Length: 259
Image (cartoon, rainbow, N blue to C red; front, side, top):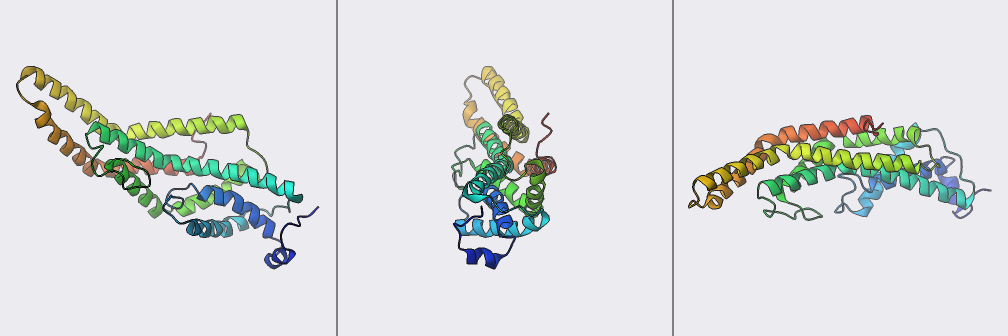
């Protein structure tokens, strides 16, 4: 039984590839809605729609043609499976932005910069997190984020065939693995700030024991603040390099080495 809830003139105008493109668009649009840079909250919905259509024109010709869905329930099944897979892949990429934000929050808390110049993004965050997030997203776009995303979309149909729900156990295990990898990456990126803060607090404790009458907090606060800014200036290229390598590794292997 063919679908009859759309005007036949529209289907005839778009040709035989209408349903093929429509099915691809379902996965692409779901993924674009949560991608870094393209799926940010401050990006207008019309722009996201245009980006999704552009990706559909890139991805659809690279795939074998999908058959027309068998009735409304068949199309509903495609809508559910493709949206789920697209959101899962998009969230997997989004985790890298969350890793930068988490690293910035950890660094800011360690260096007493958590309340300075915060809240410039869609969600309140410390200044260090905002700087790292904007720098990371910009670097990803300059490195060809759109090309990597298109390749991932095309390759995803080999991992998750259209119209088939992914295994719940496997998807849950993959999600937990991605979250754990995100926090591990965040701690790795924030390690220079955390190590400096530990050394600073140990030194401050020794000085306070040796000279109780000295107001060590008044002396030490500017030191740790300057130290945090200095580490950000010197270490941000290395931090972004580690982050970009992890992002490229994810695009090459979305499973992330999961057993």
